[in-house]
Image (cartoon, rainbow, N blue to C red; front, side, top):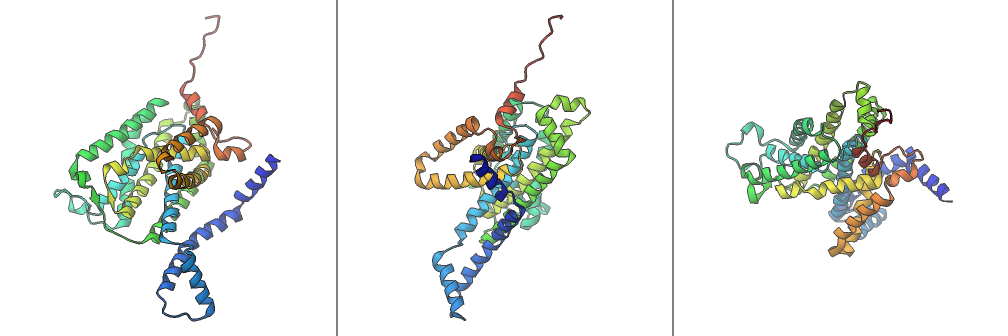
Length: 373
């Protein structure tokens, strides 16, 4: 009975027509918001149908600015979790400092848009419009990923994780104490913009782009190489694969998109400081969402992000003082009882890896000597 139910759910969720219908629905949501706002500005109604429709949209509040903001946050979480999954899930390198690229992208975008308080800041690197500044934030994150990845990705297992965690903490303190860059205690203020449909569509398109790119990479030789590195990096090296180059490439791709999301988030919030954007909790969110959905899968971060956001919203509104305890317990439950995530339930071949498998890779035993030796 359970297997039949799982098969039925799988046939619906992973049906191409169902996915297209969901995408079209998400694209039309801001249209309802604009329709409701237009109804409020009408002095009179042209027909009874228009009156009834406007009455429903205004009174029921089907789509409001808060709803658009909630969807935008979900899309951002999906992008962040998918980028982290490219390194942690596909390559098998658990990154506890991935939020450093989010912060670099946020500050890079803010500085390029003219938010710097430093009088010596170059004129050619200020007063940019949002779009090139957001891309510039992604470039800043990508350049830093090349520099730090060239050193840290040569480490293995927990040494890489600790090195990235130290990178996040060090960068946060470096930015915080350099008031010319971070604005000190005042932070940095970006131009105020009140256009939630813009950020909704932007985050939605970026989410589709990132998920589609990762899905395509999964089917290429590059994706197969990352999986080979995750399963047996030494074996991949013996076959002539340049594992360092492949790891750095995946690292840079994930960092660039994370940096652009950080820039978009900064512009949406209009204010940033080092403590806000270089948060360790943001990396923990990426880990939890990816693990809940399925580590090393394409759809896992999408499902995990949506579920975690909904659960967090429910727990936050009902148990404000205990929501962090709930998140800690949820992480423990995921590791102990759902190591393959939600996608593992629907994947008979268990193609995704679990955190246990990654940890076992860290603690590989040295080859035993034969009795003859």
